[in-house]
Image 1 (cartoon, rainbow over the protein chains, first blue to last red):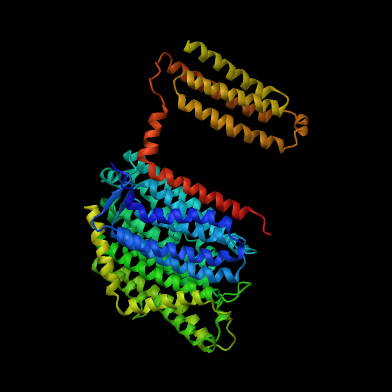
Image 2: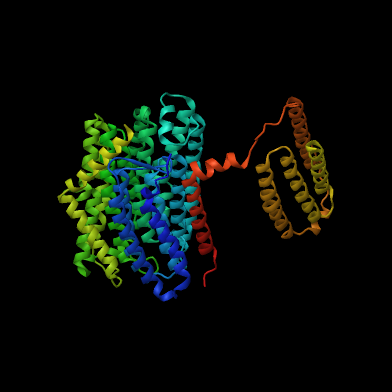
Length: 480
Length: 160
């Protein structure tokens, strides 16, 4: 039993920066706020990337009486979280110039609070810590969605997300309470020793925890909120919730389920596989008819979540590897796609419909080409990053003998190719005028960098697969 | 000595509770509810449960009664006098009260003569897990409240 506070230094650094942000917000005049807070957040996030790199241990270490456990899985997912948040800050800088809000300071430091919650969530090794950090992240995101002026859509999205998210959180807590009742402890390690056999309370707790996580991830029976919220929230916030919230929820799921429910792996793996296949199909089919690109990407997010969930049916080690790899690819693609939309958005919700992208190639060839890279990567076309993500999931499924699921995922991917091609068709082949507001250099740079990474990691996927392997081996050392 | 105070405060608690439901002036009823809660807190003290006693006074006496009073002040109290007691609601309320009375009497009969354990809910037994074992989630809850407060103020404020 020891505190070992220094292990959580990166998290506390982000937290301290966020609280400092609240204080600074009181002193600054409004016109310098956007520039100052964007610089401040970029500096904080960059610094915490370095802190995470230097403080992530290969041999898992515990802190706060075993309430958090850090390994390389935590480290890599935190770097991914910080990277996505960095891009979110760059995109927000341009977005806040275009769209008015009274709450510039609040926007940036609430973002930092959300980053803190996500970082703590992926290092949690105990139910109460997991839940509290999940709520810090979720509530920050609800607030972020509602901060813009005369943005009725964002406020509607915030309220919907808040209600649905609270239901999800309540369901998770019911599950946690049952687990505590079964074992008398909330620590993952102690829980694992009690959950070795089937019994009604264990299965009920498992069902509740799974349902809660599916709520947060937006997988099929609980996906209803996703399109409305992704569509309604301001684009940088959608970027954040598409990338960061999903990474945090998936990694927390891996870190909770493998140690605690290891004896029941086969059962919940199959549950996730069934839900995953259904999600992949529902997402792909619903996205076919969408005219709004944010809405389309929301359905595509459901579809991608489904693909990741099917990976959990494989052998545990392979599952963790392919899920982490997929999360890397998915985060980069989501960040690039929503950053791209934000770049083209204008007042009055213009620039986010397919018809607003007509003949984009004529106006800006570079933007049109990055659009091709982003959407083809989402579709999983080689040699882009998204291809390898799907490839590893399919290999994992085939190796585990689940050929049927692999074929189903392939069919869903083939369907999704149709709607990923539509923006490309609009940008290159349709006659008309694209909406092209003045380009913000930082926003543009952020999108260009992520597009570059999509190509780079597509050509050299071993960079990420090696990192995922390290993370996997470090994670397994913590379980055994 | 303990018994004397126990019965004194128990009597006060019941008496004030009776006043709070029978008094015609609602505000005075609310105030006697407050007195009843404080007397109940004192009952917990005499039973050796200091922590529950303090929480009773702070939470019920401090927060909930004030909330009641605020709510009462926003209502039109004059119209309350005209409303006649309806038989259905009177019967329902009476049935619930009778049920509660019987369960309290039964519980008192079942546990009569049992001795009071030394530390029912001391502050120390609660503080040790809260501020040592569960230190991290406990502190993060304060972050959660901070975020929620900032968010509520930012979202709830009227747009200029």
